[in-house]
Amino acid sequence: MKVVILAGGLGTRISEESHLKPKPMIEIGGKPILWHIMKLYSHYGFNEFIICCGYKQHVIKEWFADYYLFNCDVTFDFAHGNEMTVHNNESEPWKVTLVDTGLNTMTGGRVKRVQKYIGDEPFMLTYGDAVADVNIKELLAFHQAHGKIATISAVVVAQRFGVLGIDENNTIGSFREKAVGDGSRINAGFMVLNPQIFEYIVGDDTVFEKEPLEKVASMGELKAYRHDGYWQCMDTKREMEKLEALWDSGQAPWKVWT
Image (cartoon, rainbow, N blue to C red; front, side):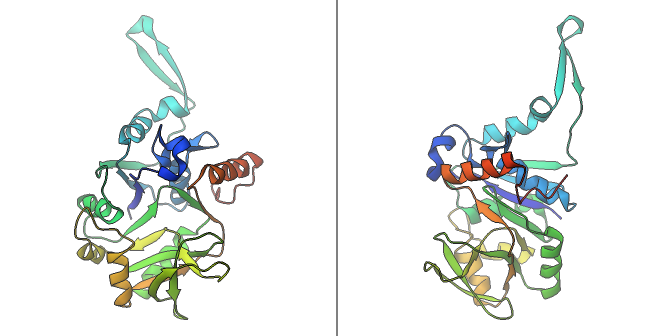
């Protein structure tokens, strides 16, 4: 199953870093947060990725193109035909497709633009700026068991986001603004989607979290996977520093791989 990661936004709320690179390429522990997200999926056996690029997409493409240079020791032998030898090969078992989904395209439009790379099959979708210790295999099993069009991971946080109206059967029926301390859950990404979701994405101006998700919610086709473990987005420099401190301490909750 393919994993689609949204990595094309401007990242204006963390402009101290994003004026130089896309937000998913901001580093935690010397590696882009995008790498951390991919490592989580890879830990559970999902190694085929489609990255929706946009703002400063060349930075993402160059990082993957030069993966060996960034992650291995190399020897350049200029005396013998400019040969390059890679040492301590730390390659990942990944297949990565990097797609230009436009500079100003909305989230739904970006998903629609990569449809041809997904095909007519279920796929996973998440944001390129949040890490978690979601058990991806359990998430997928939950999605397959209920048989609905879409599943989104839902977490409780003390931050200000739009929240989900979830009933006792984990069906999402509404979206609303969060009230401080109300204990409601938000959309944390880490979604599983059936290909029917493309029917509700009109074009580049479609916001995935609005028309498509609200439509399938109104149909009773949107389920919540309740995640009570760790989740953290990286919208601000303070949040970046918080993630960096956790990584440096050796206690990063999202690092489930060895």
